[in-house]
Length: 451
Image (tube, rainbow, N blue to C red; front, side, top):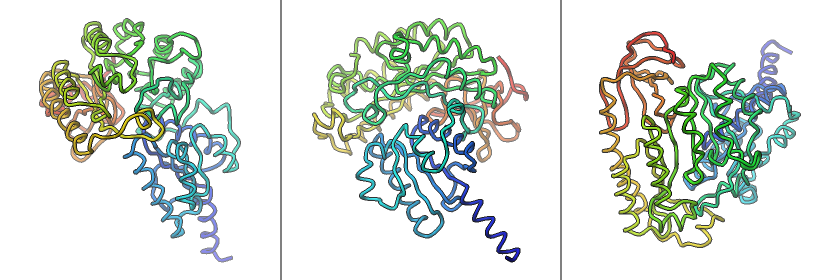
């Protein structure tokens, strides 16, 4: 064998031991991919994340199947890798995650080029397919795919709520809390690896512990996580408004390391719509929770999400929602056009009679109101100093966030590149100007600041 042939054989052999995992969808999928990455690494594979079409022999796509746009993105990605497979760039293509959990039979029929489809919670089956044994001792370990200074901690799987529009319980099953012991162990490992901001995620943080401990245990979990001293920020995502865990309030108020950031998706405000959506709270309940949070944690920002164009939403319902958004003035707001999802209660019981044009128009109206609110609120930041974590360098700016903003979904702080900051570090930043959805500032001190 010539030297060239030996080198070629070596490259082919190395490529065959390399797996590319492509992750689509939410942060929960990111965590699932990171756990799979760790197991495959331990099994002898070189694993890369979101790489190009031809850098490995095997590709695993972790799909999203939550709403129509996400499903289309997942299908487009699968077809792109099928094309790469047909051209000889890759040999093996696998699909996992929410889309294949919901539509496995249809996908096998429509896209048979995929070697095998897996749903959610099938990590051991995927590993077995690839000749790797599941390592129980690594179930709290992950190979991080993010920037390295923040990470998500998925505290549960599934959901017990019965919201009419939501397919998550159909995909992910009933609510299953992870034990506090396992979560603290995983968080400790993340902290050891350099994570400074821990973001707790679940479909519903408020429910945590009810299945496992027969009591809401989020306050106890947060208390235990605070014992990990190198975690500078702990952020809470998706606190359902019904049965809000009020024991959290004094913990938040007494611990500056918990971000003053309350993410509480209400979806609507009219009693008519909350009833049609099968939410567990009405207008009165919602206002009570929101007003109590504003009173008890006055320095916190409140973020919510809304759905526009759900079946049955009248002009009167929408007007009530607009007036409420204008009056309450949420600090952060996300709005989604209703997606008619198969097998959900809304799909089975209601006709999707509101046009796409009206849905999108309502989304735009709500975001226009929020744009004005955000512009006014951001002016209050000017000439004040905030602790900011730097996420990345982008073009001529360093891009960071205050404790009032979560990665990828909220506004950012932009600092000129001349200040030569370091991503992953905290700095005291003086805000010098603002726009509707961004802040601009400069460091007061050049070194990372501590609490």
